[in-house]
Length: 298
Ligand code: CUA
Image 1 (cartoon, rainbow, N blue to C red):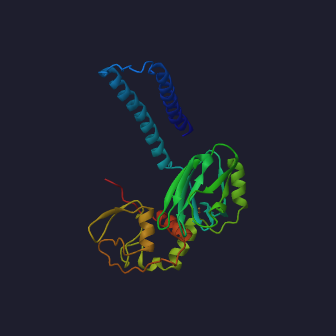
Image 2 (image 1 turned 90 degrees about the vertical axis):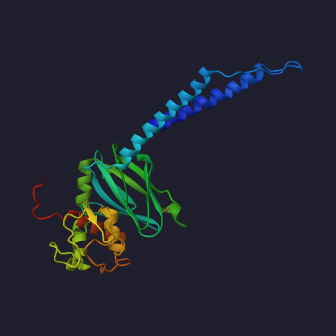
Image 3 (image 1 turned 45 degrees about the vertical axis):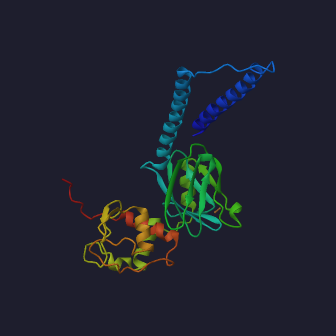
């Protein structure tokens, strides 16, 4: 990221200096010396025209290609990433680790391991910004977003909210504490775990009575959720959608938005009954639901 930034800066600086210096030089060199001087006619130059079209084209395509490949890397968390939930709320960051340890305005991570952050917002637009890792992502109310980074050096780094979100926006800050993997394990075991995200999600699934309609077999009033995550779902209006995190989130909060074909839209909305953290836990649990005996694919 820094190298690309430096490259774009160097190219811009080179041409800015070149153009300004040439303007200065030509102003002096071709100044009018006599009141009746007339400038020479210019009839164009194909070589020049091609040159100043082709060179900027190549340079801008290098910037584009380089930038796009970095963007795709940023947008695709590695499969082995550890998953951390972060919820923005006026005016703090709530963090939950996969093992269930929670923290506020602090994020402990080990070195050498990609960290995938699933980001939500309890109220308004925030932005989780980690300048040291060159990543930031909006926390958008009503949907989940993701970002990832991998820390390489032990230390303490800033967390900022990078989206104006109210009076105490400037105080919505925190620290990423990067530890060696050994120290991280020690830190984790010392933290007060309130159950893993999946355990909490499973409890909510029972407490909220999801389980009464979403039975593992197809006998429930709602579709079975076994293997739903990542699958393609057919809706009553004929559309096919992929059941990703945002689909699951929407189906819990606004159950009528996308009703699965063959079912009635009788599910109540859970808007106001579950927090963003609860939602992430429910989704974490639903993701673990796999068909009991997967049939061999042909
Ligand atoms: Cu949250 Cu600015």
